[in-house]
Amino acid sequence: MQGIPTTGNLWAQYFRVGDTPSVLYLIDPDNNFDDPTLGSWAGKFTKPFPDERPNYYTDYNGLVEWDYSNPCNTWENHVDMATHAAGTLERVRPEMYRELLNKLSAIYSIK
View (cartoon, rainbow, N blue to C red):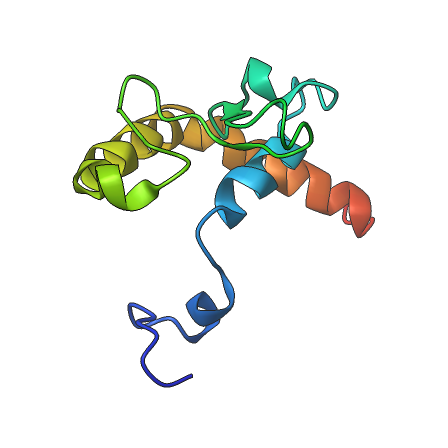
């Protein structure tokens, strides 16, 4: 695809922002699938519009200010948001990889 930076990996063009937290949320063995606001390897999710859109969740940004209604108002904070998300991933990476391989082995009956 023209114009989409892939950082040297052709497969990267098929992933969009938000895919990684969703996948990590599903593979975390200790996760509560009924309440994504509790947190998991993916971090936490939040309901920015609980009354208008009760089934809509997005990444929780910690203490980083973010205007969900009009993200352009707080776009200068996107680097801080990325740093917050990366911190969670760095902390639990070995456990995540181990569990991902366990789940893939179970799915594909690899022994």
